[in-house]
Image (cartoon, rainbow, N blue to C red; front, side, top):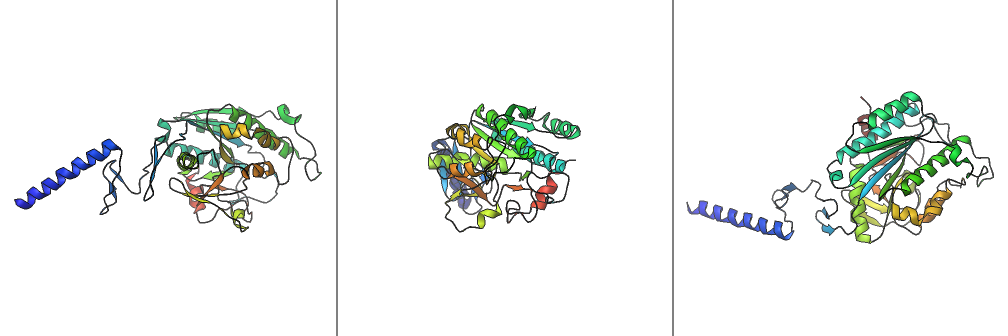
Length: 343
């Protein structure tokens, strides 16, 4: 009986202590089973709370001073063009429309995985399409209908932007029609992005996302922006070409991924409206003059601002197998590709 009384007494004080910690906003962890009794979670659960705190064991809590208000995803699609500047086949050797649809499906799956996150912040998906086949357009419209988030489908009018595009590029060559439509789509997307409230994810239709991609990008943005006390740019892909040079990187801990500073990306990245407005002229210069490399104005921005990419990658760029801009290392991308197949 005495032993039982000690157990009851110990249990009473433990419960009382947990209640006190809950009131004071402290978290404790049971080292025996990795359980967090204050929030009734396990150590491998997502412990962060959007807009309030980022909690990563064993680093502790980061108070969020830069909460995310909204996320707008702008997907640029064109299922009629296989490769913009190459003639090689893509990974998995499919028609371009299959990449477009799986890319969209991967984004939808990732948004739905983060559904709880978007109980507190606004989410919207916009598709800006150029020249996709009617059956692909119908499929995309069907996919974004009846979702919990707001969505919009827009057809690009290239003629609205042709007048602002220089017909001769930096290599003194004629700009191709496919590149002109690409530049017009980027320009249209940037104009839409400027109308958004907060974060904007500008993405091309040949990126397949892991299920946790959107969740990690939003929570990592809040945490790292709060720590660094500045706006950021996030690239979702760990491009292989970033390992071809020996250069310094800052390594930061996001929500569940490491992130490292980089100086180059392609045309898919997440940016805040504040950062977009600040660098508007540089960003829109890619829509008016074909630089070499095409993304050179972005790289000039990254000399002044933090641009971060995840390790391992959150998305794969589905170019050809030998491309240094494609297959991100140390991830089973065949599994991710299969999971994004439409039923």
